Amino acid sequence: MSTPQPHPGAPARTREQVADLHFMDARYKLLDLAAFLDRLDRAAGGEDHRVRGLRAALSLLLEKDEGRVARILNLWSDPSVAPIEKADTKAASGVWPGLK
Amino acid sequence: MRYIEPHGHMVSRTTDDYQAMALAGCAAICEPAFWAGFDRKSADGFYDYFCQLTQHEPKRAAKYGLPHYSWLCINPKESEDMALAADVLALVPEFLKAPTVLGIGEIGLNKNTRNEMKVLEQHIALAVQYDQMILVHTPHLEDKRKGTRLIMDCLKANGVVKPERVIIDHVEEHTIHEVLDQGFWAGITLYPESKATPVRAIDMIESVSAQRVWLNSACDWGHSDPLSVPKAAQEMRRRGHSAAAIDRLVYGNPVKFLSQSPRFQDPAAQA
Image: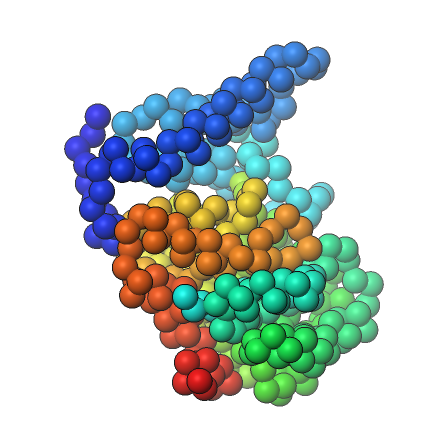
């Protein structure tokens, strides 16, 4: 477990206090994610790029350093830098389709 | 508690929402022009929309004691049609004379296309020509990081735009630091499924110097919550932030940014 590094803008708090505030919220979200993966297992067909991206992000949750949210968002981001010629849809899917 | 809703699409909300926001402590609402959920076919549709934003909606908000301000543009989702964009941009200067218009917004990118970029450049030029502040929409999800960087490059390339007069909205954990480091204001949008939740927003607030950050709900016709700013304030209270720190974030910061327009009146100064 990493050494606590409180941010300047955050009131001091213990890990127990954080768990008291947010554990149940995190618990149900993790169970929802597990249920989603089970639901996928029961369904037919191949895996699309969004689910591949989600599975790729799971290992980042177990990394020890802070910044997991940013690392996941960066993983799912379009890495190109130039504007595209034309869009084929208005919507975004949540994960860059080129992610391997 | 008092707060400013600096980004709410009230044309899509019911009067019950105005009532709930007023009861929760909202002191003023700002409404940027946006996508209606479908593509408008002509500039006439935008003319009517700009009338709604500058004439009708302030009256509706006033019934609940709420000052209502607006920002004008053609949004990036409809910017692919360059001819339509040109027609709409030609309408904007007339409406900039309205007493409750604060600037150009929400402009930006959606899918990071060449046409969207061209229309963004035209909006920035218009803002410079009429000395207007700018409110920026950044793309959603996997397009956000690239789009945010393209937008900031575009703003800097103009050479005249002052970053402190621009707010770049919908930042998340992977974009907020770059936005603030380049001198812009950053908006954290509290959206139930995409963008940030109130809990994540306060995590971000605790990780940056929050002097140039505001929170907004961007409540619209989709799955959104017009009370998400006071809910984020409640999350700060749960974590032990002081009343002064909460007030600074949800009231003081938006007032500071918006007061760069002489049209914005600090509600506290009016009391």
